[in-house]
Image (cartoon, rainbow, N blue to C red; front, side, top):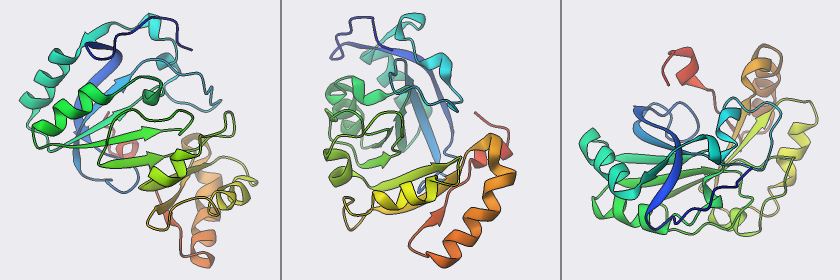
Length: 207
């Protein structure tokens, strides 16, 4: 949900920010500074950060403050995630990060048009809310979470719309990994256009 009025040119509701190792998808294993915005209306039943959904429960942080934290971390990559970060106009914060010669990636459900020019667009569509058309053209990687047998067919349904350079990933939902990882392995062997993404940060016990 999103209730709090936000002037995103000056501030954003932030659940947390931290310097860590990217655990999933294309940049897995790379050091990255994460900015997790608060506010989401997608409502994934298996979301592991449900506390991010209500932006009124989290403080507004100024863009100046966040940029200072990014710069002091020494990172070369910032990942903006959520919640659903594309609910906000991210133009100001993205432009200011890129002025520091730092790459910017976003992790989004693709349910909103993105305001801001990122270097990497991780599109993780959800069945609970349909994505907008631009998500398919902007996607650098398509990351589909597998939590039900029907999700394989659903993942394939996106391929008629996705751009030709997009990287394709299947990722087991964490709580069902023992069940679905073997199925994903066999699926990828038969459909090698897909790659496997794992939540390696959880194996390493890091944020």
